[in-house]
Length: 205
Image (cartoon, rainbow, N blue to C red; front, top):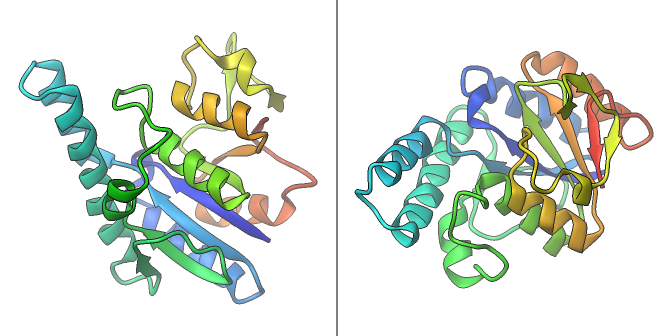
């Protein structure tokens, strides 16, 4: 199995353990391309933007560079390889998105509708892969209830755990995004092994 995996900044405390456990699956033939979130570094960029200190354009590239910082954190001590171009062969690789997006930024608006979620979705679309969004919630909640599956188009315009840009890309690309809770890395790996037949989070399609 091959997946693009977005690891959110909300999981920064256990993110390295997630990468290590993905490596165990890789030994059994899996291939994972990890797209890092922005973490607290991107939160600082958003704060500066909200205060009018940087433009939309500057904030976009600063947030991408924040993702690149998180990539180094994820790779540090985990044995995962840092790459500048998407690769879904067997193993665990972590994308440094800045250089890649400088050359291939088409499909992304430079706004907060298109965060690291949307970048991961765009990469998955280009690779013809499904995406796993690893976050700190159990999946998509509607009226306070977890929904097992939902069309991307039906979430557009509604606030959820995934950004609006991702929904547009998922809808146009006809791919799937599995939203899984990664707060327990061991449990996450068990959930990944069940995909795509069973998803214990939410499938967005």
